[in-house]
Image (cartoon, rainbow, N blue to C red; front, side, top):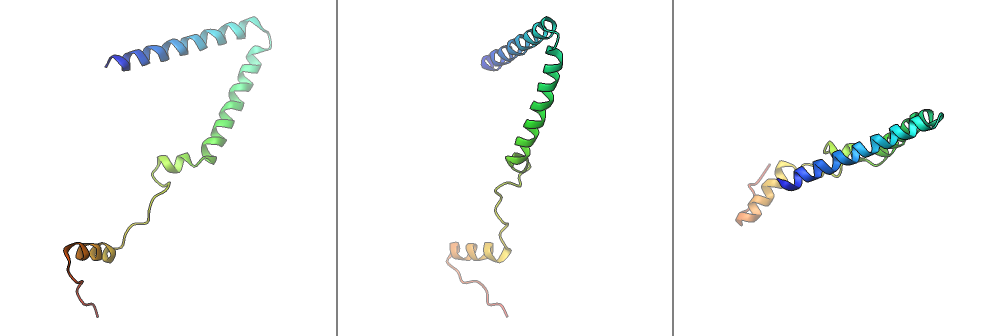
Length: 91
């Protein structure tokens, strides 16, 4: 419980620090707000491209390295083999 609270606190401190740095940079330089907006747009586009190209959406949705579902007869054959029986004769 303690580690969760300390990690949240650390994350909050980092976010506050980054926010303050952005505020200071954007007000001290006339061209900084334009650059910050351009950087944010470029970063989001870059992240979107990386996210789609990495195959991560399929992995998150469970479509990644999924095996084909077994057929019923294959499962039955494994069951008969485990029990030491012969499968029934099929016409």
